[in-house]
Each structure stands twice: as structure tokens, then as C-alpha cells.
Image 1 (cartoon, one colour):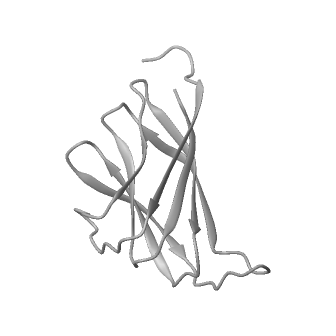
Image 2 (tube, one colour):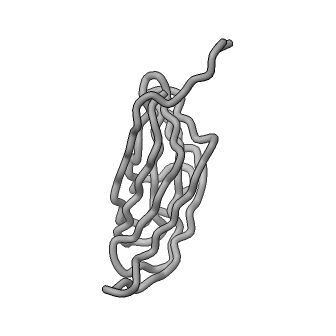
Image 3 (cartoon, one colour):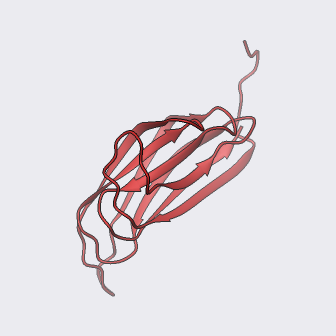
Length: 127
């Protein structure tokens, strides 16, 4: 057991654009790798979903991937929006205090339920 607390050492950002619809909850095939853990572990504090253009309602699925298996961790609802010079595109931010990748074999991967360009960003730090 550790005798002192483990704090974040190096800030880390991961980003990916996804555009192909994938309906799977267990074995996605059109998946984007958002962020991969460091050998010492990585804590993700926030995931931001931002649509790149006019968006339809959709679900962005967040998976933990251990190198062999996908584990559905969370789902983020994306609202429909018609962006313009006066209306912003849909942006959804979700914060976590328990999303930790234990080592470099683990990653966070994402899919979208509809075919539209969606940017996903992870904000965190290596331990």
C-alpha cells in the first residue's frame, strides 16, 4: 500500500475526430482512440464533445479498452443544432473524478451513433 498520495505529474490532452456511425455497445468497429494511458497511469478529469458542423441528435459512447476488450464506460448525449455566425455548435463537457487508466495497455476510445463529424477531447494528466 502506498504511504503517500499520488499526484498528477504531467498534463495530458488527447483528441480525436469521429464521423462514422457505430451502434455497438460491446465491440465497436468504427472507433477513435481518444487517449492512451502512461506506464505510471493516467487520470482523465474531463471529456469534451464538440460537433464540427450542423448536428443531429446523437450519442457519443465512451469505452475503456484494455488491449483486448471494450468496456462501455459512459454515454454523452449530443443535441441537434444548426450552427451559424450567431449560433454555436453543440458542446458537451463531462467531468470525472474516477476515470483512471492504470497503465499504457489501457486507452479511452469513442464512437458516435450517427454519421457526423464530432471532435472529442480528453483533459487529464499522467501520474
